[in-house]
Image (tube, rainbow, N blue to C red; front, top):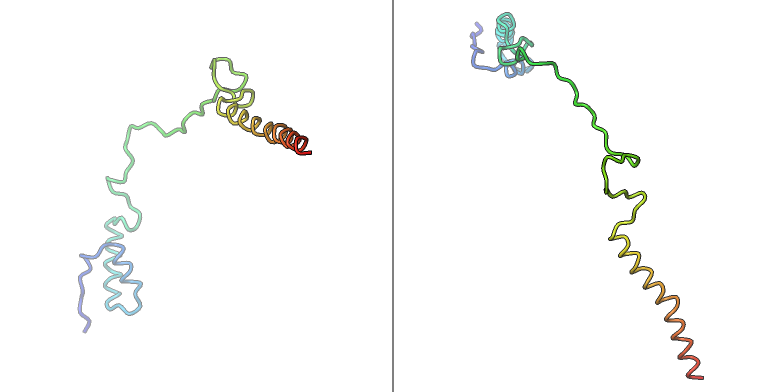
Length: 121
């Protein structure tokens, strides 16, 4: 004689796992419990509870409006830095250092070497 087991303490997910277990005993009683829960409106079968229902009276969601950024031709933003047509102060500083060192390498050092060579002859 098969012993009747109570499945009331199991959640819906645990009950489904118990039924799908191939070595579990009393799967028929578990299936009956699942059917009773389905008829009673268990959340496991997709019926909604008052917590899940949408809040009434709220407007439908609409995506936010896209804002436009000021473009190059936009004159409504005066004195703004435009990286396409202007050179920043940092860039001017770096370019000045590069030009100075290239001038030293290309002009001063060869001139100094030529002067030293002329003196030693």
